[in-house]
Image (tube, rainbow, N blue to C red; front, side):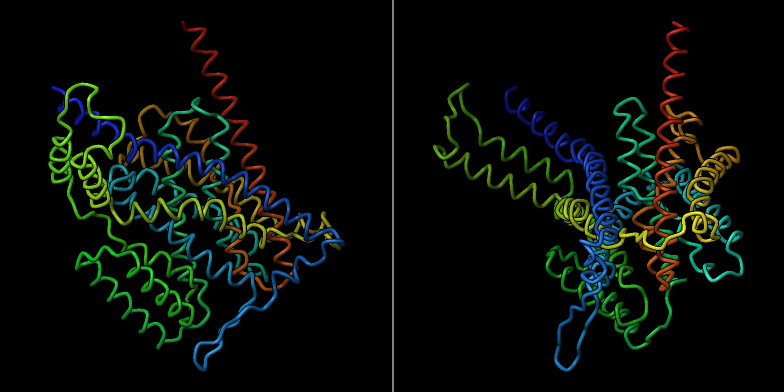
Length: 457
């Protein structure tokens, strides 16, 4: 019985460590990183507006470059962040999308259609509102700004409620935010590409083909994918497409299977545990006392590495760097709204500002709720168990927290400092009031539900 108990304990520990705890850590990291994002944004605002810190724009627009053979690549610091570091952000987003498509909330049509419909509505309605307000104006090109959701800030807002909200609601928010991130990437690739350089695009295609062959041959060396990924990023950079698209492309080719399948792993674990046949409390205080035990543990470690997928391993390594370093640096470099010579009454009335604020604050919840409702009413999808429509309305308000992606698209849309300032102010206002509205609505609904339960009991 003892080996069987040990085996059950090992499997339970594996399930807890590999599935439950990573999920809990994911939501905790998203919530924690939102605080760091908020701090970086506030620092950027102070830095950009106090004369003693007048170096803000000078530092971010400092040219940094390097020479490869006879070619020189030179860009401003902010461009290296937005084109380079953010490619890693989109790479992790791509890994999360792939994981969801394979085993998560997007893995079956029935599971996927509810959050996907929500994401489509959450992109279409804000875009229509913005386009209607900005029709035939110089700011019309910013129609995609209010379309995406900032998953870090949205999950941070939801973390305020702790366990008071259904877990399924958090999953729904993460799923539709990931889906509309994918939509945002497609929009960037299709509509924010100014000029195509065919040679680089062909080179990119060849490298992607090699990447596909490497995946097909079951090559699991991370360094191979890293080198090919960098080469694809360089090719995309020179093709005219936005280089962050490279992050999504490469992520789709990262292997999602380990060297061992689960049955083989279980068999290996049983074999390793059989080496620990000793009387009760007689195995010794240190594993170094028994070479058979030491070899079994080392073999078990090797087995765990072989069952772990490269996708899982890379995502586990990159996620903290993206959440706690790359996104805060992006916010620090992009959230620096300058208030000097800014006429607030004029700014608020500007079509660009109104389009973004109304797109985020009204368009997002209307689109997400309406399309979610239609998907259920038309029997295309099911409302997740334990979730009521007021929950959907409340979390759809969190969908209006655009911030990171909205700032990113704003930088692609405009070059005029005035329009960039207008869009930054509108993104901040729209995101803040969306977060506040969602928190107030869900707190009110939770309180009324608890009071009703007390009355009924």
